[in-house]
Length: 294
Length: 281
Image (cartoon, rainbow over all chains, first blue to last red; front, top):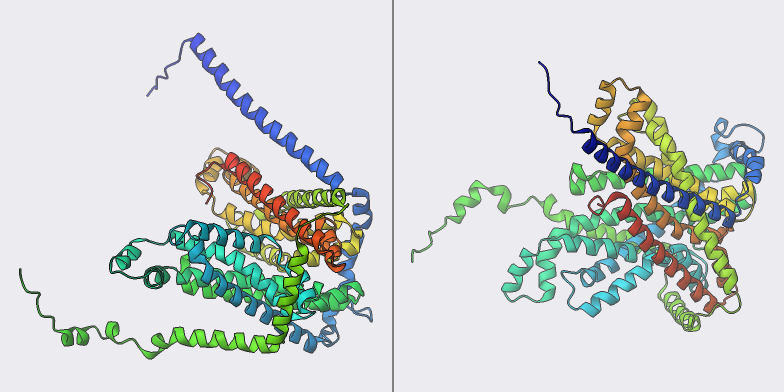
């Protein structure tokens, strides 16, 4: 079987070809211009950040040997040959780790409660008044844009050294982050139940309680768990500024070059984060069914 | 009008017992969870030394501090702050770019549809380990290696994002359509051709969106790594907080807010330009 392909007249084909080439060339040019701009930005950034490849390559050995050193005990053996010696402070570390977990738990719960209280005012479909919505939104934005550790630095001065500052910092940051996510869930909720309940003459509060809340609780819980996971990481560094938890011990170990302690504390933190990740992932999957396990 | 039919509730109850009578475990699950959560919360408050008097005293301190923050005033150090802000933006941009460049090949190794499970597993755990360590900790480690300054910040962000990117990219690759890859293979392409012509065109827009999003979120991270001495505006912020120069502190916080908002705006525009309005999930 032969297939006839219609071939356009030479002239028409040339015109089409030229137009196509021009389009491709324009696209390429735009891509190249974008790339050039990006590279220029990178170069400016490299100057701004005092990047020094010479330092990097001279000291890169340090990076590798740093890991070598933190995996070596004081007596020159590898850390895993003597667990008792490596984790000599496990009693103290576990206590601090527990404190870290408590900081993130109390902080997340407080943040979630405040976010819960505020999110109906921030959502477009449930907010009673436009000015209220605007104010609450700006407030939440402020709470999540300022990094938690900056709040912690300020709170350490106001409330004194210790976990209280860490908890409050995490609570504020979580309020901002969760408030936004919660209000987005509410915005996606079905409004028909609200209309139904309003038609019976119910107040705004009753509408939220009986029409919106049953639709959104699973989403709330899932986001709160995710936030808890993130906050465990965050709480592990709160100690850097004196706001409690295991970070304090870690920063002392790093600054004072207690090499094997650094690796022991890091391993404890990583393991804890793993366990929390897996547990909350499992809980989220149970809340939402299998498909949400992303 | 017809009278509604009488319903024999007793019979329905007998037929569907599980609808009318939930077992105690189902009814008590929610209150029990709430009580347990509250109990841990209360224990936490006690264990973490929350006392009402301390809280009130702290709040009044905080009130004083906020009063002293007004009005925000940089004093004479505005040029230094602008330079620090530039440093922060540089750290975020460079760190994210480096992370993306290094994560792309590694993420191929971690993707299910490219590499068999046996090789994938260690790569994934490796990425998880890197991700499990906070950026601030990486910053401390790099300060030990290259010394104080923004360069350590760049490397810290690059390493910690490498872990995050590796995971996100490999998920994007796993989500890609296999038909294109099969097409390339059918026409006799090698494994590298399959990746270059079958896979990359599909995942690049997704990846570009993620990289832009991370540049934005790294601007936030970069503002704080200065607190441990890795350069940028965080260094200035931590210093001014320590010497209780509250007007300068509030000015610096304002600067950070404005910078983050600006980056938000620009990267949002860029994201739409690269992947189109519809593709943004």
